Every structure is written in C-alpha cells, then in structure tokens.
Image (tube, rainbow, N blue to C red):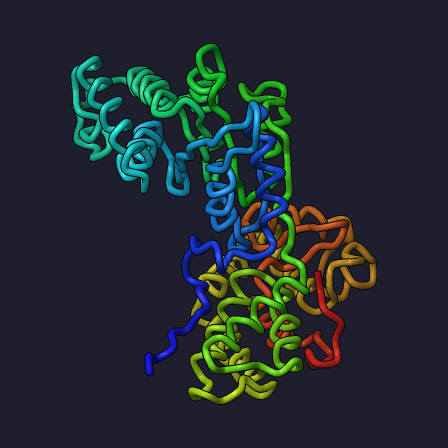
Length: 401
C-alpha cells in the first residue's frame, strides 16, 4: 500500500488547480477585464494568495471566452528584489527565458537574440552586473524599453504580470514611464497588464497620483478572502482522502485559529497532518497542540526581529509596536478610542492611525471593511500571549479581523 503524502502546501505558491480554492469566479472576472484591454491592479497583503491567484488566473486566461476574448498567454515578472533599472532588466530577462511554456520561451529567446544583435551586447552582461561602467543610466533605460517592446512581440494576445509592483516606486530611472511607453502605447493594443502589490497604499499612490506616468491606467481590485465554507470543505476532503479524517470541531478550530488566512491555514493543517498517525483522525487536541508549536516558532521568526528593531527605534516606531499590541489584544474595530490609546502608551489617540498606516506599509497589518487586523494570525497570537494587557485566553475571545 502506497504511503500517503501530506497534501497541504504552505511554503510556496500553489500551482495545482485541485488545491486552489475559492478563486474561480474572481479569476474569471479578472480574466475578462484583462481581455477587454483594461489593466488591473490587484491588492492583497503578503502570504494571502496573490501569486497562487495569478496561477489560477493563467489557467483562466488560457481559455477561449468567445468572440473577442481568445486565449491569452501570461508572462510573470517578479519585481520583489528590484532596486535599479539593471535589476529590472534582469527580472524581465528571467521571466522571458525561463517561461514554463516551451513555445513562448523560444519566441522570447528569439526576440532577445534579435535585440542583442541590435544593441550590440549581451543582456546577460547587464544582468550579471559586469558591464562597462561607461554605459549610462539613460542607456540602461533604453535597453529596458527595447526589452519590453521585445516582450510584447512574443504573443498576439498577452498579459504581463508585474508582481510586487510597489517595489518600482524606489527604483531610479523612471521605470513607470518606460513601462507606459513600451507596453501601454501604440503597438501594444494586444497587451494587458496586471500589477500586483502587497502594500496597497504604495500601489494606489502610483496609480492615483496625476504626476505619475500610469495615473488612472488600471482598474483597482482587492483579492477576495476565501469563504469559510470553501476552506472547510477543502480541508475536510484533503484530510479524508489521505486516511486521516478530521472531526468537525477540529476543522472549525483550525479555521478559527488562523482566521482562514491562506498560508497559515495550510501551515497549521500541514502540522496537524504530520503529527497524526496513519489511519487515525485529526482531533481537536491535535489542532491545539499544533497551533501552540507554530505560535512558539514566532519567537525566532522575522516578525520577532522586526519587533525588536521597532522597540529600539524612535517614538514613531515604538508607536507601531503599541499599535500592534493594541490590535493583538483588543481587535481593530475601535482603534482610536482615547482610553485604549492611553492604556497602550500613546501620547494622543491621534497617533494610533498613523502608526497603523506605517505598519500597513510594512505589510504587517491591513484594513478590511473599516476594521484593522494583523495580517499573520500566528504573529497576532504570539503578541497576544506575551502581552501584559491581554486579559482573556484565546478560547474566550471573539475572532479578530
């Protein structure tokens, strides 16, 4: 008898359609918007499924939706580490030459080969940061522009995804103007763009500031939350299909503890599955124990490191720590009450919201329907457990966010 494998994936984006849940309708909406030649800016905090969604969207875009909406190809450009135009060039080069579809990858390689002959040097040299120092920033900009023009030629129907698009706001060399000229002007009517960003305010500024080159050029959408019913059904099926059925109380507590946060839910489910013997059910006690183990790992995580830096900073940074603690302990419905602000050490209740906005810029908190919340539920619970002001155990407290 074959050994069942842990069905839960939490350390990377999902690309198996059978494991992507609750995104079909939204993927269809976004695909039809893009095929209608309207660019889209998609917001969502880190680790809430944006990259997984783009995998679902790629499958949806590959469908024929009828007259005027043929299948579209997708090229994803990951901008997570971009700090310069040469870095941007390297990201586009990687996206083109490592595309998973052989036909498109070869078309991209041909376009790049023709471009390299035209400009007279190997783009990989720029990517490797060993090109001559005599090349000016203006020439780098021209190379990026030519590269993006080459990119638009790889398909007759193309969507280009710029992932973590907000990174470009700190990139010198006017990359937004280059994108507009190469991919949003004459000759690019067959190209639509998807901008994804984990820092919503930064992307909104790039789209809503009339001084920016791409002002007003994209429809803004929020990545929807996965419904509790969809997640419950998915978890139940995955546990049952691998011989480790979970009772209803265990499944409900698993979702309560993670607030149905995509990454944390998969991570906690993985931990529960891994610590349940073959053929045995996942129990409520299993979930409690697994959740405790994961919360304790926060002590050695990036979250704890960021918190230590903030605590040692200036008054504004310490206010960010106070705001985090307030959210973890009290929830995010009434964050600017005078008694609450005073209890957590704010000199004025008016200091709370600016601190939350800065934390939102760090990707640590977000706001949905007027309620602020800490994005990662495990981090939130770790903060709550270590707080001298939290006065109730988690089992007695209402869910946040």
